[in-house]
Image (tube, rainbow, N blue to C red; front, top):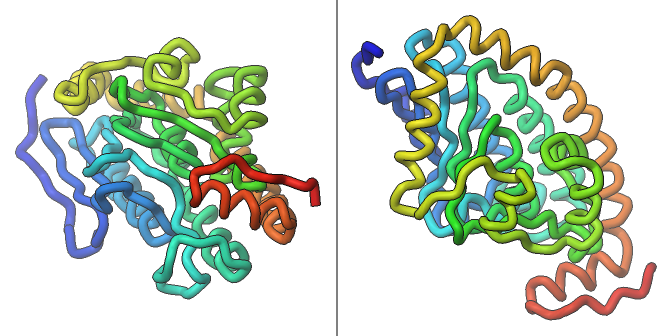
Amino acid sequence: MTKPPSFTLDETSFADIEVSLDGHVATVEIQRPPLNFFDHHLIRQIADAFDALDNHGPCRAIILASKGKAFCAGANFGTGQADGSGSEDFTEEGFRNTTGLLYQEGVRLFSNKKPLIGAIQGAAVGGGLGLALIPDFRIATPAARFSGNFVKLGLHQGFGISVTLPRLVGNQVAARLLYTGRRVSGHEALTLGLVDELVDEDHLRPAAYRLAEEIAANAPLAVMSVRATLRRGLAQAVARATEHELREQQRLRATEDAYEGIRAVAERRPGNYQGR
């Protein structure tokens, strides 16, 4: 396969990600180490990068990766300020403003045209699990861990997980993971079908690149056509799901259990829930 020259998008547009192209394979790397918490600004940057790569002919496949200890340890809901600054908390303003904007940008990630491979190391927790479920394929390390821990926070899942998780592992497995909020190791994720391949950390990026290159070796219009058929209606389903998820998150945020859950997780202890 003939490789075009290396290519880098205009980095001035992306404060928190690096985008590059090696041959026909692009890499979009999140650069908020060590835990790579996201807000709507980061999700918008990723979506903008995907749009740019969709319109760049030489790119035929994309790797979504992160720099640091975790792939993504969740969302930084912030204080509701427009710039997304502030502590990682769960304020009412954050839910009404920041999270709604985040989900609007998040839906864009499901609308890109070119195949995505996720390279997952460390934690993909909460909203980070939602981000990890966007790619077509996931390659992970044994140290990776996945958790939709929303019920431990007294909250409802978000980021379209209501659609993407059952679609990937089936309704029964998804229900068990979301009802319990349990943590899944890299090895268990492989058996559940949550990831497609497990490799040592040193081989994570090369393994993701090999799969991306194998896909990119085929006729690009045909690959995009097949992908569009297999993912038909997904972005629309996620858009509907996130509207419902946000309403439920807002409703549950006002409960005593949510305040207790947030404290319990921060203090690394079991929650003392009262059902109110």
